[in-house]
Amino acid sequence: MHPGLAADLARLPELLEETRQQALAFLAGLDERPVVPQARAHAPVQSRTQAQPDPTDTGTDTDTGTDPGTGTARPAGLAETGGGLPAALAEFAERWEPRLSASAGPRYFGFVTGGATPAALAGDWLTSAVDQNSNSSLDPAGQHLERETVGWLRELFGLSQAHHGTFVSGATMSNTVGLAIAREWLGERLGVDVAEDGVGALGPVRVLSGGAHSSVSKALSVLGLGRTALRSVPLLPGREAVDPAALERALADTDGPCVVVANAGTVNTVDFDDLRAIADLRERYGFWLHVDAAFGAFAALSPEHAELVAGLDLADSVCVDLHKWLNVPYDSAVQFTRRPDLQARVFRNSAAYLAQVGEHPDLVHLTPENSHRLRALAAWFTLRAYGRSGHREIVERNIAGARALGEAVGRIDGLELLAPVRLNVVCFTLATDPTPERLAALAADLADEAFLTPTRYADRPALRAAFSNWRTTEADVQRTAEALARAVRKPTGGR
Ligand SMILES: *Cc1c(COP(=O)(O)O)cnc(C)c1O
Image (cartoon, rainbow, N blue to C red):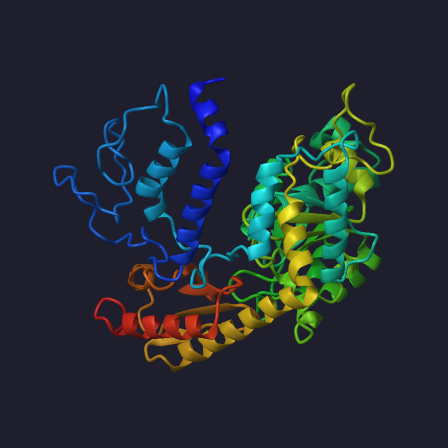
């Protein structure tokens, strides 16, 4: 054994304890560290001749002797010997950790970003410790644990037993797998076998959607259906939800079977398509109904908001992200479908040493990957630890936080709310001259205290704050509102 490996193995308990201490120090500092240390994109980039380390420098330096991030001298190339885990821990702590964001913390409102509950974190640590490849019934425990977890998630989102679920790395992958099954279904309807003969056998495909997430286009590109297969259907006035009458007209104009992507939780204003109305149209027009409920599915946990996702169970396939609102570490999502048989037709992987596809296909036959991390364990831990009520509390507290920030924004002179806070996102802009540059400057002024990301909504550049972290409290909302008010008053930020 390499002496570095042998030395680390001999001290494994001690070294893992040091790693734990480092993790705890990071977590303890979450509330105080700059939320995004490198978000000050407008800060002047230091030239190499003033070679002070500058933590705000996003850096484009490619000189071999200079750290691309900090401009400081760095070790040249890959080490021959290394120095073992202690050396890696020390260098990570010194060079990389200070540059990491507090995305696991309570005021990272960018994109839609979850944290990791204590139990989810523990489950994720153990996932690496036990290091399973849980894709085969020849070594079945991991698959069984995943099935149990999928069953709990079905209950959480009000899905019936008819929905089969598989863990994947994120909602983009979940949308991709769902649309791959849709593609196979189109083949079934047209009497061709896409998995065997390719997408060419299908002819042009239509995918109709109102406010589809960008990952849907990406999925269509990956699947060989092409980004132009996606046809935008008009939205309801002043909304991000599809107009069902317009969808019906688009369906009437479409020859042959097609796919409808319904959206349950859009990223700017968290709007929801009327899933039951769309499922009714399916009775008449016969399409595959895929629902992107990446984070919107969690509305089902709040009795006050569950109506927004009524009809989710009617979908042929459903995308739900878990590293967002379930608060498990990256990366984790689930793909649900009523047609696991078609899923296995797409992803079947035949080899002498693998089980046959059969009635309950192994995970090796159900996703683009062959090897399968025991990704379900973090979700299993958090669901086992906090149950339905624990996760409902997170969702309801986040919704209340978004509402409170929305009200605060309404009271700040110089800011304008662009949409009602329907669930967990606050979308707003500068009341006067809201250019992308001025909004970026405002966001950069905030970045030590809170992280918000830019968007465009109702034809105006805007910012959005998305609530999905289990740590976020009323105090965080207040701190964010105060930071926003200060930033707007600054000559560069506000009027
Ligand atoms: C976040 C999101 C996605 C993509 O999720 P990833 O986990 O980043 O792949 C897809 N759809 C919606 C509605 C989302 O919010």
